[in-house]
Amino acid sequence: MAHCNTILSQILKFVPRHEFEVLANRHHYGRSFRTASRWSQFVTMAMAQLAGRSSLRDIVDNISSQTHRLYHLGSAKLSRSNLSRINEDKPYALYEALFARLLSRCQGKAPGHDFRFKNPLYSLDASTIDLCLSVFPWAGFRTTKGGIKLHVGLNHAGYLPEFVTVTEGKTHDVTIGRTLDFPKGSMVAIDRGYNDYGWYNQLTGKGIFFVTRLKSNARTRVVCRRPVLADNGLTSDQTIEFTGIQTAKKCPIKLRRIGYRDPETGKHYVFLTNNFKLAAKTIADIYKARWQVELFFRWIKQNLKIKSFIGTSKNAVMTQIWIALCVYLILAYIKFQSKLNKSMQQILRLLQLNLFEKRDLMALLRGDPVCSNQPAINQMALL
Image 1 (tube, rainbow, N blue to C red):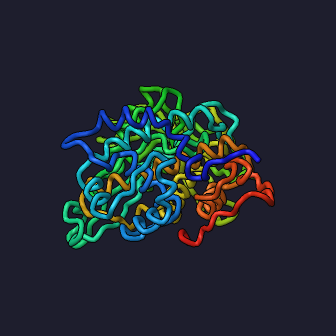
Image 2 (spheres, rainbow, N blue to C red):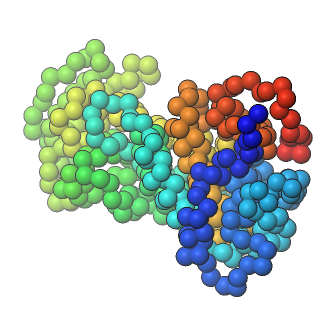
Image 3 (cartoon, rainbow, N blue to C red):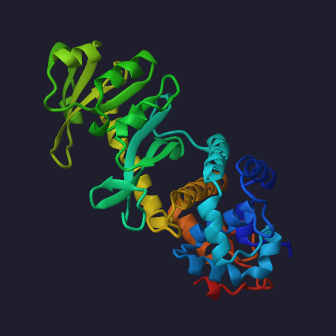
């Protein structure tokens, strides 16, 4: 029978240890470690994300039950005080850099998006993570409420969070949107929270296409009209220009306005874009696909631990968020590599129940039967 490491060990192999150590040395300050290390921190926190552990005591107790396996993972056993101290003091920038490394690996494996055009397609949005202001006083959001905001530019090729920024809850969505450097020729779907006519003009000048919803009070003039297929739900396809004094100065270019009535809900939408080549129905479908970024936020909040935190400092919170995003990319890479018709949630549930099983990872995902002479590993300590 072929020897297999534990499922967790095979998962961690997607993070090359030598690359991790280079990043760890680059993002280290303060005294040297005695027994603990940034790798031990990552192994412990990644296990907590995969196993769904939510408290510091829960994490340490469960990793302690597998002490005899930590040596093979290259990790040391961390006490609650050690894990808490590392999360509080050691810079989270390490995991931000690790996220960028993992993202580049995933991009090489990711499938394309579902549209016929070859332009990269992104959906841009932000989600607020609520925090208790009395426990997290640095996370001021409103008078009696704390929070931070997770900004994501989701690439529809594999649904990878290609652009990620974590800011104060007060930061406006479009402030971050202006800083993102999308590749030339990209299609970017945004909602009305990113309404900025000057930014629309800048995107057009850079050769980047956008699809958004037009504000109802926008003052415009129709330059020309094109015929539409009413059977597709389209109500209008026009070239417009802004007539408002300030708006016309900020955005002096001609844009395309498309009316669309959803056949399921009967709701009417008015879209605004700078792309004149794609079919009007395709523009409507691009905006509809923007819902994928909402599903991304829902998925990570429901399946990974980014709503309840085991530390209260800004560094500890940011560390937990960036490690959760790294785990998301590892799961995405496993999904791409396996080429199986399994959702990310199905993959995560399989891994949760078998983290310390000694069997082949891909065989587990395929659902291959377990050999009768393969010893079973007791998982009760993790359940």
